[in-house]
Length: 309
Image 1 (cartoon, rainbow, N blue to C red):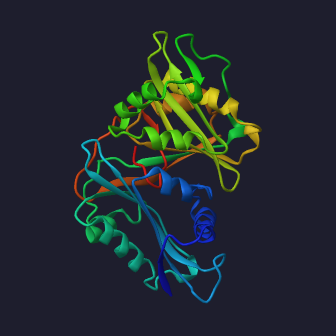
Image 2 (cartoon, rainbow, N blue to C red; image 1 turned 30 degrees about the vertical axis):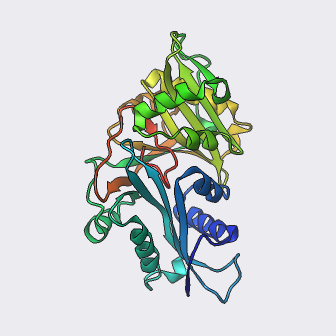
Image 3 (cartoon, one colour; image 1 turned 120 degrees about the vertical axis):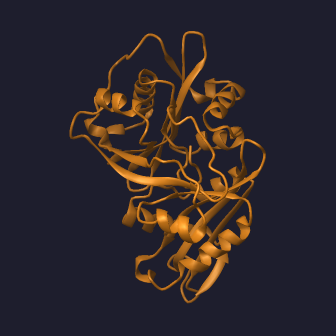
């Protein structure tokens, strides 16, 4: 077996395929190039079988990205850490994780840990700084959603291309305290990605919602920020109506902080009983310092591979 860094696209495609089939993770092939372009540094580190070609050689791998926090300090994030089922229990994931942590060094690093891995990441790898709550996964059947024609006269929504990028960035920083302007603009502009921004009568931004198409004929809401449930309902309604053949998709997926009470109000207005499920998904964990976010307005985090807000 061979440890490689930033292998060809076909290797990444194998990872996201098997992660979707076995664990339901939602990605697209273009994510590889997005991570490389959207972050200050990016490493896709994996173990491959050199006896096979690039379309069948993936064994284990993980994704490491570097940006800066709100104070200008390096912040690394780890995601898509995955091992093919046939190779599990043989130690192939260890050199991948070690290589990533060697790059991180003494800087702060974050990941979203699955319930069965959370304590291991804390005890063995030092991801001990975390909020008291978990993130939950909301799974909705699109064809069973019930959209209102107009929720409120207080708010309007606009396509992101009609919004001043600097005004949107100021709002985004009020939620996550980092400057993600260039990264989010790149995120919005990709294929089959739909984004609207909500405004009040004074033209103040009240939230924004992005939904994208991912593998296995699914939709993922990432990110979705709203100042109150009424804005959330209006945003979700308007973005869903933008998506061609919306009702033909298998699932619509959210990732939200369990302390977010407004999500229940939104669900009650758009999702009849039996059209959705909620389950524990991940916990955000840091190595050095817990970075805060306005979790009361976070309805779904941005890019769960390399985002915690």
